[in-house]
Image (cartoon, rainbow, N blue to C red; front, side):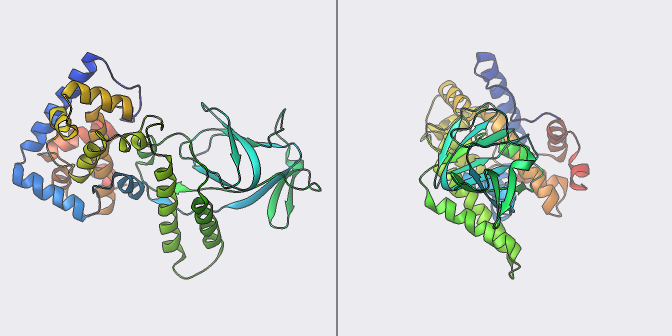
Length: 347
Protein backbone atom coordinates (compact mmCIF):
# COMPACT_ATOMS: atom_id res chain seq x y z
CA UNK A 1 0.00 0.00 0.00
CA UNK A 2 1.18 3.54 -0.65
CA UNK A 3 2.25 5.87 2.11
CA UNK A 4 0.31 9.09 1.51
CA UNK A 5 3.26 11.08 2.85
CA UNK A 6 5.81 9.51 0.54
CA UNK A 7 7.04 10.93 -2.73
CA UNK A 8 8.43 14.22 -3.91
CA UNK A 9 6.89 17.59 -3.08
CA UNK A 10 4.41 18.79 -5.66
CA UNK A 11 5.16 22.31 -6.77
CA UNK A 12 3.88 22.51 -10.34
CA UNK A 13 0.78 24.38 -11.36
CA UNK A 14 -0.88 21.07 -12.25
CA UNK A 15 -0.12 19.71 -8.79
CA UNK A 16 -1.60 22.82 -7.19
CA UNK A 17 -4.76 22.52 -9.21
CA UNK A 18 -5.02 18.81 -8.38
CA UNK A 19 -4.55 19.50 -4.69
CA UNK A 20 -7.16 22.26 -4.77
CA UNK A 21 -9.55 19.92 -6.56
CA UNK A 22 -8.97 17.32 -3.87
CA UNK A 23 -9.66 20.01 -1.31
CA UNK A 24 -12.94 20.85 -2.97
CA UNK A 25 -13.95 17.17 -2.76
CA UNK A 26 -12.97 16.94 0.89
CA UNK A 27 -14.75 20.20 1.64
CA UNK A 28 -17.95 19.03 -0.03
CA UNK A 29 -17.79 15.72 1.87
CA UNK A 30 -17.47 17.57 5.16
CA UNK A 31 -20.09 20.17 4.29
CA UNK A 32 -22.66 17.52 3.44
CA UNK A 33 -22.78 16.52 7.09
CA UNK A 34 -23.91 20.04 8.01
CA UNK A 35 -22.30 22.73 10.07
CA UNK A 36 -23.75 21.48 13.36
CA UNK A 37 -22.53 17.95 12.75
CA UNK A 38 -19.09 19.23 11.84
CA UNK A 39 -18.84 21.29 15.01
CA UNK A 40 -19.99 18.36 17.15
CA UNK A 41 -17.52 16.08 15.44
CA UNK A 42 -14.67 18.47 16.17
CA UNK A 43 -15.70 18.57 19.82
CA UNK A 44 -15.87 14.77 19.96
CA UNK A 45 -12.38 14.39 18.54
CA UNK A 46 -10.94 16.94 20.94
CA UNK A 47 -12.65 15.32 23.93
CA UNK A 48 -11.29 11.93 22.90
CA UNK A 49 -7.75 13.30 22.96
CA UNK A 50 -7.32 12.56 19.27
CA UNK A 51 -6.72 16.14 18.24
CA UNK A 52 -5.79 19.43 19.84
CA UNK A 53 -4.04 22.68 19.12
CA UNK A 54 -0.77 21.05 20.28
CA UNK A 55 0.40 19.57 16.99
CA UNK A 56 3.61 18.09 18.37
CA UNK A 57 1.73 16.51 21.26
CA UNK A 58 -0.75 14.99 18.82
CA UNK A 59 1.98 13.24 16.84
CA UNK A 60 3.75 11.89 19.94
CA UNK A 61 0.48 10.60 21.41
CA UNK A 62 -0.43 8.80 18.20
CA UNK A 63 3.07 7.31 17.88
CA UNK A 64 2.53 5.61 21.27
CA UNK A 65 6.22 5.35 22.20
CA UNK A 66 7.18 2.32 24.25
CA UNK A 67 10.00 2.26 26.76
CA UNK A 68 13.50 1.38 25.58
CA UNK A 69 15.94 -1.07 27.11
CA UNK A 70 19.22 0.79 26.92
CA UNK A 71 22.77 -0.26 27.61
CA UNK A 72 26.01 1.47 28.44
CA UNK A 73 28.74 1.08 25.83
CA UNK A 74 32.28 2.42 25.65
CA UNK A 75 35.13 2.44 23.17
CA UNK A 76 38.90 2.58 23.45
CA UNK A 77 41.57 2.89 20.79
CA UNK A 78 40.37 2.93 17.19
CA UNK A 79 36.99 1.24 16.88
CA UNK A 80 33.95 1.20 14.61
CA UNK A 81 30.56 -0.50 14.96
CA UNK A 82 28.06 -0.83 12.11
CA UNK A 83 24.37 -1.62 12.40
CA UNK A 84 22.15 -2.55 9.44
CA UNK A 85 18.73 -1.03 8.98
CA UNK A 86 16.39 -2.44 11.63
CA UNK A 87 12.71 -2.11 12.43
CA UNK A 88 13.38 -0.17 15.63
CA UNK A 89 14.22 3.51 16.09
CA UNK A 90 17.65 4.10 17.67
CA UNK A 91 18.81 6.65 20.22
CA UNK A 92 22.15 7.48 21.82
CA UNK A 93 23.37 9.97 24.36
CA UNK A 94 27.09 10.64 24.75
CA UNK A 95 28.00 10.44 28.43
CA UNK A 96 31.73 11.10 27.97
CA UNK A 97 34.21 11.62 25.12
CA UNK A 98 33.31 11.94 21.45
CA UNK A 99 32.28 9.70 18.53
CA UNK A 100 31.46 10.01 14.84
CA UNK A 101 28.05 8.88 13.59
CA UNK A 102 27.49 8.12 9.91
CA UNK A 103 24.05 7.17 8.60
CA UNK A 104 22.51 6.51 5.22
CA UNK A 105 21.75 9.66 3.19
CA UNK A 106 23.23 11.89 5.93
CA UNK A 107 26.44 13.85 6.42
CA UNK A 108 28.70 12.49 9.20
CA UNK A 109 28.03 13.90 12.67
CA UNK A 110 30.58 14.40 15.44
CA UNK A 111 28.89 13.81 18.78
CA UNK A 112 30.39 15.05 22.04
CA UNK A 113 29.51 14.84 25.74
CA UNK A 114 25.85 15.62 26.40
CA UNK A 115 24.77 15.22 22.74
CA UNK A 116 21.59 13.30 21.99
CA UNK A 117 20.79 11.64 18.67
CA UNK A 118 17.55 10.00 17.59
CA UNK A 119 17.04 8.07 14.35
CA UNK A 120 13.24 7.64 14.14
CA UNK A 121 13.20 5.96 10.72
CA UNK A 122 14.76 2.68 9.62
CA UNK A 123 18.25 3.19 8.22
CA UNK A 124 21.72 1.70 8.56
CA UNK A 125 24.34 3.59 10.55
CA UNK A 126 27.80 3.33 12.10
CA UNK A 127 29.34 4.71 15.30
CA UNK A 128 33.11 5.02 15.54
CA UNK A 129 35.98 6.70 17.36
CA UNK A 130 37.13 9.94 15.78
CA UNK A 131 40.35 8.33 14.55
CA UNK A 132 38.78 5.12 13.22
CA UNK A 133 39.45 3.93 9.70
CA UNK A 134 38.87 0.67 7.89
CA UNK A 135 36.21 -1.99 8.48
CA UNK A 136 34.22 -2.45 11.71
CA UNK A 137 35.62 -4.54 14.54
CA UNK A 138 34.68 -8.18 14.82
CA UNK A 139 32.81 -9.84 17.69
CA UNK A 140 36.10 -10.78 19.37
CA UNK A 141 36.82 -7.06 19.92
CA UNK A 142 33.70 -6.59 22.09
CA UNK A 143 34.14 -7.13 25.83
CA UNK A 144 31.89 -6.92 28.88
CA UNK A 145 33.55 -4.70 31.45
CA UNK A 146 31.86 -3.85 34.74
CA UNK A 147 28.34 -3.50 33.39
CA UNK A 148 29.20 -1.94 30.03
CA UNK A 149 30.02 -3.23 26.58
CA UNK A 150 33.53 -2.23 25.49
CA UNK A 151 34.42 -1.88 21.81
CA UNK A 152 38.12 -1.93 20.99
CA UNK A 153 40.97 -2.18 23.48
CA UNK A 154 39.74 -3.58 26.82
CA UNK A 155 42.83 -2.37 28.69
CA UNK A 156 43.03 1.23 27.44
CA UNK A 157 41.13 4.14 28.98
CA UNK A 158 37.85 4.79 27.11
CA UNK A 159 37.68 7.60 24.56
CA UNK A 160 33.87 7.55 24.60
CA UNK A 161 31.03 6.28 26.73
CA UNK A 162 27.41 6.25 25.49
CA UNK A 163 23.98 5.16 26.61
CA UNK A 164 22.31 3.59 23.56
CA UNK A 165 19.07 1.79 22.93
CA UNK A 166 16.04 1.12 20.79
CA UNK A 167 12.39 1.88 21.36
CA UNK A 168 9.12 1.02 19.68
CA UNK A 169 6.29 3.05 18.24
CA UNK A 170 3.13 1.07 18.97
CA UNK A 171 0.98 3.07 16.55
CA UNK A 172 -0.34 1.13 13.54
CA UNK A 173 0.43 4.29 11.59
CA UNK A 174 3.98 4.71 12.87
CA UNK A 175 5.58 4.77 9.40
CA UNK A 176 3.29 7.58 8.28
CA UNK A 177 3.88 9.66 11.41
CA UNK A 178 7.65 9.08 11.40
CA UNK A 179 7.75 10.37 7.82
CA UNK A 180 6.76 13.78 9.25
CA UNK A 181 9.98 13.86 11.30
CA UNK A 182 13.60 14.38 10.24
CA UNK A 183 15.56 11.23 9.42
CA UNK A 184 18.05 12.13 12.16
CA UNK A 185 17.43 14.36 15.17
CA UNK A 186 20.66 15.67 16.73
CA UNK A 187 20.48 17.78 19.86
CA UNK A 188 23.59 19.27 21.43
CA UNK A 189 24.06 21.20 24.65
CA UNK A 190 20.85 19.95 26.30
CA UNK A 191 21.77 18.30 29.59
CA UNK A 192 18.11 17.62 30.44
CA UNK A 193 17.89 15.17 27.53
CA UNK A 194 20.82 13.15 28.87
CA UNK A 195 19.15 13.17 32.29
CA UNK A 196 15.85 11.98 30.81
CA UNK A 197 17.50 9.11 28.93
CA UNK A 198 19.31 8.03 32.10
CA UNK A 199 15.98 8.05 33.97
CA UNK A 200 14.36 5.91 31.27
CA UNK A 201 17.20 3.41 31.36
CA UNK A 202 17.12 3.19 35.17
CA UNK A 203 13.35 2.73 35.24
CA UNK A 204 13.45 0.04 32.55
CA UNK A 205 15.91 -2.05 34.57
CA UNK A 206 14.01 -1.92 37.88
CA UNK A 207 10.81 -3.68 38.97
CA UNK A 208 9.16 -0.72 40.63
CA UNK A 209 5.38 -0.30 41.04
CA UNK A 210 3.70 1.47 38.08
CA UNK A 211 6.87 0.90 36.02
CA UNK A 212 5.08 0.82 32.66
CA UNK A 213 3.15 4.01 33.36
CA UNK A 214 6.31 5.86 34.37
CA UNK A 215 8.19 4.61 31.32
CA UNK A 216 5.42 5.68 28.97
CA UNK A 217 5.40 9.21 30.40
CA UNK A 218 9.21 9.49 30.39
CA UNK A 219 9.35 8.43 26.75
CA UNK A 220 6.76 11.03 25.77
CA UNK A 221 8.74 13.73 27.55
CA UNK A 222 12.00 12.56 25.97
CA UNK A 223 10.56 12.63 22.47
CA UNK A 224 8.93 16.01 22.94
CA UNK A 225 12.12 17.54 24.34
CA UNK A 226 14.14 16.20 21.40
CA UNK A 227 11.59 17.43 18.87
CA UNK A 228 11.28 20.82 20.53
CA UNK A 229 15.04 21.28 20.42
CA UNK A 230 15.15 20.27 16.74
CA UNK A 231 12.45 22.59 15.40
CA UNK A 232 13.27 25.79 13.58
CA UNK A 233 13.68 27.33 10.11
CA UNK A 234 16.88 25.34 9.55
CA UNK A 235 15.15 21.99 10.11
CA UNK A 236 14.68 19.79 7.03
CA UNK A 237 11.26 19.84 5.32
CA UNK A 238 8.68 18.33 7.61
CA UNK A 239 6.49 18.98 10.61
CA UNK A 240 9.19 20.56 12.80
CA UNK A 241 10.02 23.12 10.14
CA UNK A 242 6.34 23.85 9.57
CA UNK A 243 5.75 24.52 13.25
CA UNK A 244 8.55 27.11 13.17
CA UNK A 245 6.93 29.01 10.29
CA UNK A 246 4.76 31.87 11.66
CA UNK A 247 2.31 31.61 8.75
CA UNK A 248 2.03 27.81 8.66
CA UNK A 249 1.99 27.05 12.39
CA UNK A 250 -1.58 28.44 12.79
CA UNK A 251 -2.69 26.32 9.83
CA UNK A 252 -1.24 23.15 11.35
CA UNK A 253 -2.86 23.94 14.68
CA UNK A 254 -6.22 24.51 12.99
CA UNK A 255 -6.00 21.22 11.08
CA UNK A 256 -5.17 19.30 14.24
CA UNK A 257 -7.71 21.10 16.42
CA UNK A 258 -10.55 20.90 13.91
CA UNK A 259 -9.96 17.94 11.55
CA UNK A 260 -13.68 17.53 10.85
CA UNK A 261 -14.08 20.96 9.27
CA UNK A 262 -14.68 21.07 5.48
CA UNK A 263 -11.19 22.40 4.77
CA UNK A 264 -10.13 23.58 1.33
CA UNK A 265 -6.91 25.14 0.08
CA UNK A 266 -8.67 28.51 0.03
CA UNK A 267 -9.82 28.14 3.65
CA UNK A 268 -6.35 27.10 4.79
CA UNK A 269 -4.81 30.01 2.89
CA UNK A 270 -7.06 32.38 4.84
CA UNK A 271 -5.78 30.86 8.11
CA UNK A 272 -2.25 31.67 6.91
CA UNK A 273 -3.22 35.14 5.62
CA UNK A 274 -1.72 34.26 2.22
CA UNK A 275 -3.01 33.93 -1.32
CA UNK A 276 -3.89 30.41 -2.40
CA UNK A 277 -0.87 30.04 -4.67
CA UNK A 278 1.56 31.55 -2.15
CA UNK A 279 0.15 29.35 0.62
CA UNK A 280 0.28 26.18 -1.47
CA UNK A 281 3.90 26.75 -2.53
CA UNK A 282 5.03 27.68 0.98
CA UNK A 283 3.27 24.75 2.64
CA UNK A 284 4.55 22.23 0.10
CA UNK A 285 8.10 23.54 0.23
CA UNK A 286 8.16 23.61 4.03
CA UNK A 287 6.28 20.41 4.88
CA UNK A 288 7.41 18.33 1.91
CA UNK A 289 3.85 17.54 0.77
CA UNK A 290 0.78 19.42 -0.43
CA UNK A 291 -1.82 20.78 2.03
CA UNK A 292 -4.61 18.37 1.18
CA UNK A 293 -2.17 15.46 1.24
CA UNK A 294 -1.27 16.42 4.80
CA UNK A 295 -4.94 16.75 5.75
CA UNK A 296 -5.78 13.36 4.25
CA UNK A 297 -2.83 11.70 5.99
CA UNK A 298 -3.72 13.24 9.35
CA UNK A 299 -7.39 12.25 9.06
CA UNK A 300 -6.39 8.68 8.22
CA UNK A 301 -4.02 8.56 11.19
CA UNK A 302 -6.82 9.75 13.49
CA UNK A 303 -9.25 7.27 11.95
CA UNK A 304 -6.87 4.35 12.49
CA UNK A 305 -6.45 5.32 16.11
CA UNK A 306 -10.20 5.60 16.65
CA UNK A 307 -10.91 2.30 14.89
CA UNK A 308 -8.44 0.45 17.09
CA UNK A 309 -9.17 2.17 20.40
CA UNK A 310 -12.90 2.97 20.47
CA UNK A 311 -16.07 0.94 20.04
CA UNK A 312 -17.56 3.41 17.56
CA UNK A 313 -19.27 2.70 14.27
CA UNK A 314 -17.85 3.62 10.88
CA UNK A 315 -20.40 6.40 10.38
CA UNK A 316 -19.50 8.03 13.70
CA UNK A 317 -15.77 7.86 13.02
CA UNK A 318 -16.33 9.18 9.51
CA UNK A 319 -18.03 12.29 10.92
CA UNK A 320 -15.33 12.77 13.54
CA UNK A 321 -12.55 12.90 10.94
CA UNK A 322 -14.36 15.09 8.42
CA UNK A 323 -16.43 12.88 6.12
CA UNK A 324 -20.13 13.46 5.52
CA UNK A 325 -20.98 9.81 4.97
CA UNK A 326 -19.71 6.37 5.88
CA UNK A 327 -19.41 5.44 2.20
CA UNK A 328 -17.19 8.44 1.37
CA UNK A 329 -14.98 7.66 4.37
CA UNK A 330 -14.80 3.96 3.51
CA UNK A 331 -13.76 4.74 -0.06
CA UNK A 332 -11.02 7.14 1.05
CA UNK A 333 -9.79 4.89 3.85
CA UNK A 334 -9.63 1.81 1.64
CA UNK A 335 -7.77 3.72 -1.07
CA UNK A 336 -5.14 4.99 1.36
CA UNK A 337 -4.78 2.09 3.80
CA UNK A 338 -5.49 -0.83 1.49
CA UNK A 339 -8.24 -2.41 3.60
CA UNK A 340 -11.71 -1.29 4.65
CA UNK A 341 -12.28 0.46 8.01
CA UNK A 342 -14.25 -2.52 9.32
CA UNK A 343 -11.47 -4.96 8.47
CA UNK A 344 -8.81 -2.66 9.90
CA UNK A 345 -10.76 -2.26 13.15
CA UNK A 346 -10.92 -6.04 13.56
CA UNK A 347 -7.12 -6.19 13.38
